[in-house]
Image (cartoon, rainbow, N blue to C red):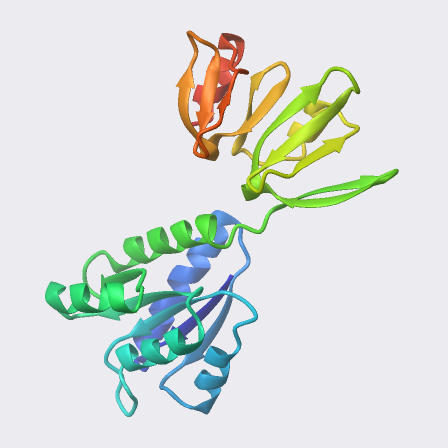
Length: 237
């Protein structure tokens, strides 16, 4: 994850740096940080580079520079994918006016649980926006890379003894592996619901054990929910 910090106060810059380092250690993720004290050509060059998503953490009031709000406007002229977090002392009316216009992720007050709120924001952004975990399957006649966040569920095809990976874009992949082998390659968002099914629990909106099915956020109903696996699912919620 790339974080761009725009802050002219050295003590606040150090504080943000320490919070990001703690978050990185606690969540076992790599974060690259770049620092700017004001709006200048080097910051504009960074804004112009839209080849990857970023998280901008910006003070609204910057001495010897245009404001954080004006910088955010320049960001949105080029980039609507990156997230913007403002560090602020302004009132709620100011926040409500600019949050929707500039699609600001959050306004955090410097003296109101700043550490806790910034870590919480970074966690949400990292898990939902910067989830690049891949399921990589290579071998004889197989060379597949699938983003885990795009996998809905995985079933076992009894006839050809392959697993079928069902994805959000309605593409299916048939792989000559067992469910156990696949499950061992996935992260903890995936749980077994049936002897022939694994599901991405983040995609499930309803579980019905009495009738043996679950419903995905796509609206699809899958009749592969067994009470035998109930404890395992609930332990991992």
